[in-house]
Length: 304
Image: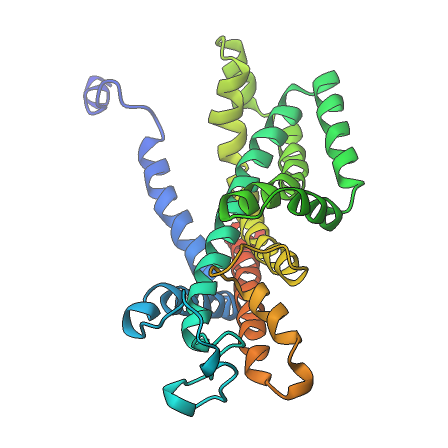
């Protein structure tokens, strides 16, 4: 009896070793499920290629993207050293796609992350506290959802001069509603778990419950939704730019390039439309594929 007792390390918590072994195994299973999704891997590859094209491309293919040269306007692809031709203002099309890609990706990523962050905290607080707090907060959400997002975006963008920071805030201000509702549903179920009840009994407050227990245990839902929010934000940028509410020149994004190219559709200048349109489709599809893969990877039944 004494020998068996002496073999136990003082202060060691039972089950720690098993938990340490289970965590890497769980991570490996999650990664295996994600990498087993071919569309998700395709989305990752496409996204990395678009990021490399937008941020590393200008270093390998420097072009003039500030001053216009109307003598070089609307040149066909392949002419005068322009692989994809030139725009209606004389900009090299490849270089313009790179600069526009930086704007679209930066606004989409920042707006999606900001919307997810605010929506996650908002939904977690509403779901955890419940009662009149939940009722009041969710009525605000329901009222905001009743107004079409595009209507709000167009009105605000028309009042305020668009800039990169302004567009991020405007898009995030209408995109946080979806993650808020999702996380609120998760919080309603998580707040009654044993570890949350134990934390309350030990004197833990609401802030600790929300940020230490509710949000970390809903991280799967948050991450998956974040990818969809980024894809939607990139589409919102394109929508606003197509309506003429984009960042003023010489800045550009894929939506404004597409909008400018529509003017010349009857002239057969296809290179003004297809490249930015294809870029928008690729980046949105890539984020959606990644989101689907992450959703499968976090699915408990698949990990089992």
